[in-house]
Length: 530
Image (tube, rainbow, N blue to C red):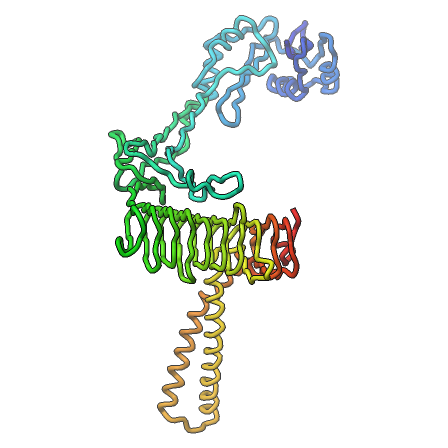
């Protein structure tokens, strides 16, 4: 393949441009390249139109361009550097038939004068000297690309997903024999591996300028007790058999405290820094607190269970009105009846009856019955159940759209601000009355004036204290309005008596609804069949 190119030739006292056509798909010359060269060589009497027509000719042709000054024209090289300074291109123009060619020293010298001094392509120079190619860009130098590094990263060899859903049986119920939500580890297990940062390698452009790789982030393994780190601080291992969790970038392993039977008078209340395994029941009036997970093989009666990790109750909780489960992550129970449950993640149960249940993520009633009936159930994102309410019209409140704690904070703030605003208005009336008496020149006892002044100061302070609370309630209200992803879904039947609230709006069911998804749209609760 050969590009179209030109050569200056001289006959007698005249100068000509001899144009050689492109071959085998080569590129044609642009007129501005030819005229720029002629201007550089001080030729001015040429006809651009004639030259342009000659470039369109597919045959060799010559065009007169002016008088010849008697000097032959030497071979010439133009150098162009890419925007990123990583590639230098050489473009050669031939000498006239009697002119001198460039040699290797000249080519290199010309490049250096253009500041191109790194990554010279000696083979390209050699090839050109042996078989010249004109009016074609030749890569004459290449920079060394920078090799970007990689941030340090940590691989964990246990479950670090707090909201991982439990395994289920074919009927949809939770498989308590094979929970995959708790990361059990054995003594000596590898917990995490640090892959150190790779800083990369600097590059260099054709001007010889150093190009630094971008900065990378370092990391280190964070861990608590019961863990050993290797010599080069790249791997950590558990010293005990127990449960691994990742909290705020640190790995903790808690060993397990096992209660062989019931939590009752024989054990007293349980308070343990780690995981607790209870093989029996938690009897009425007793408390179990753990920084890790609490797994209960039996039932929870009218008792209290608090966990920094998950709470798993394999037989369920019958709270008698005051039984309480509070978990910083998830709660899973066969059933929840007449109890209070709070979870920082999700709540899973087959039956939820007459209870106050709150979850920062989701509440799901799955399994053979999959029932939520009576009480109040709140979740920020999702509530799912097979059945909602009962055919007796049991009042059942379901709320989604905002974290339950924020919703309660909103209600508390709203009540407080209303009450405080009324108090301030009453103060304002008293202050104004005393002010009017003073303006009219009427006698006001000194103690009353002092009282009015103190009341005015109190008013000013309490009114100022309300401002951040009003801003907070407005921020929560705004969050309540932005709840496009929150919904309630019922797979079988939702009965009359069920109220579904999505943030600031609600729907009271007046008739049965089946296979329905309730969500917020266009400022109201929509019920869509699925």
